[in-house]
Length: 373
Image 1 (cartoon, helix red, strand yellow):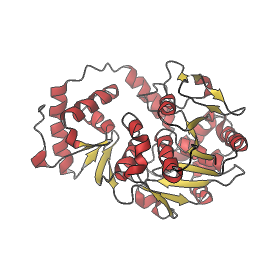
Image 2: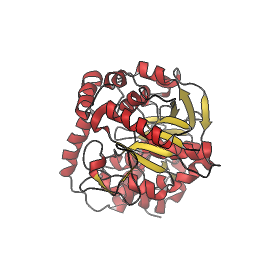
Image 3: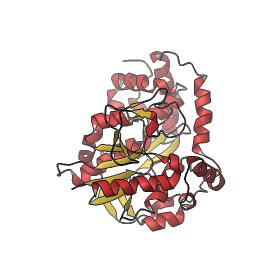
Image 4: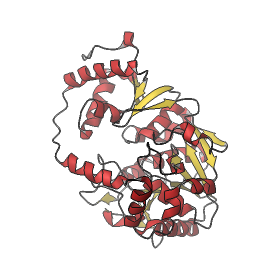
């Protein structure tokens, strides 16, 4: 029994795909093929935009245009990628979506892979639901990858099921924005479903999939994410996975429809600027230039804990109960490369506040003063 899961936006969607495969098919000996982008945050990959097959060594060819990313693969410096580490820690086959030839190229890759592995099921998975964006939402930040994958899947001559996990979790569309489009619940993640990817969640920077896992473990409240501190509700609906009609998603997503005949990434970017008003790769280009000028100092534990105390007090006044380590790093004015050091410091000094993989903001009467105990 071979299964194909297409991770709509790459990144955390690939981790969620591994969770989904374990949850739905954990009693089978084989593992799904996960088709995903190599498109990571600048903390992992300092180069803007997605990586293609020519950006790696050690890839293994599956079809003429599809390459497997095994644990031995390495991105060619200065590029970076989380995919080889995912391949090392998870038993699934990770195949690379290369969008340099636009939607036509991605469609060809999916069709070749389907013909080669002949999967019994094909799922297109998106955490949060921004694949359902029209394109004009003011909160939309990263529509390009999801829209291009949707455009490609809409042209593949095979039945593909579109699944939305954790509606609203990415902060780009609210649960209310997508609720009317959501179909039946296919699955509700539980703590048991998170176990196969628990080691990955300790280092992977995806905020949306991290909150999905935390909610599956029972965490409820309001979580602040990203540099802007977006408040995301964690409710009983958060760990659910819904089926959505793929044609309906295409009818909503203007960028996906417009991108169907694209043959280059430049064409997709131009359409994104025209339809959505921006290209997220432009944002990454600007941020990459800014990051080059930053010189992070060694983390000062006493200063970080003192700043944390102030942040937590202010967060409680906003009725925030949790946050991500990415947002904490931003809120404490630390460099992104200091995230792991901050995470280790806080977990070591206040393990009771670690709501894996989130940070719990305690009540006032149980908050430390900011000093190391």
